[in-house]
Length: 461
Image (cartoon, rainbow, N blue to C red; front, side):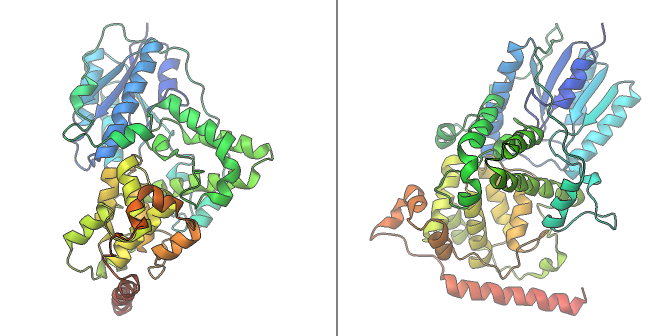
């Protein structure tokens, strides 16, 4: 019998369409499915609180499904390069398979581990599973990466179509002798003192079965209205797949092909294409991160380094975080975020613009808060979208494009349904006063941006 194979899972917590798992099964030996909670390797960003909550639920679901198929989920904690090699030695494994990651620190860990294991005589292979198009395959005519979305996505669509998803295995043969595994509960991923996750539990069910069910529900019930109403936060027609994709409970290949099937039925052609373009935006963010690993901390447009951020005013930052700005649409969004770990995309743009351009608070402070409170906090999409709103990122909205939350509310929540649901305090005589004047703060933001332009001209960039 062949020696055991190890499948090292990371952001791919699923059994269907998992190329690393498929490779291990094709080797015809025992399979060890391993998850490593790595909070120790240099450059690895610790998970935020909401993400940790989701991870617990997703791992619990995956472990149960593996046991039903004859396998086991081995949990270990520590620096991944050390832990994986320890498990290889403990199991006498002859092969290790994983699906690729695209952050800078993650790629360094994976490359170093691949070399070390091969030097030890272990078979190693990695696979594309979380992106439809690998970052090194999408290039401009000059051979570099794209910095503008529309030509990027056009180039993607000109490539061969994404592969078909792989079927879910009927069984996963375990290794027989049980390897030492941490108890999931001992990782203390769930909040207890206090337990602030009540709204998350009411809103979400992590795990692969729920992810597949949500995709079917979206395509059957919501896709028809997606193109028309996706910007209306009270309409409820968004896919809600972002945390599923972030944790890999469902693959983009599955989403792609099932959506294409819906489009080819003819019923929802325009809406399906629009939805696929949003999957393309996720791809674009990941490609930008691949080429700019410091995306969460460094302005992509370096001329923004000259932006004159005023001294941080903690009381205003706290008011924004807690939804006490006195601006109804902003407060509603921040309440939704805290309660559910999610915020409608249109409202994300509005709340981010308000923080950056009305409160003049550095986009990195907002990115950090979203990282801690979003269940779909992603190392690429989160900083990418914050830089887009700030005007410092790829294909960014111009800095002078400032989302006016009052006008946004009139356009996308004209009957106040969303605000009443999440910020009912704004419906009466005791509604809180705005902490900043929108018109004056907009003018101050534009004055600050003028300094950036002057600095850029002076430097000759």
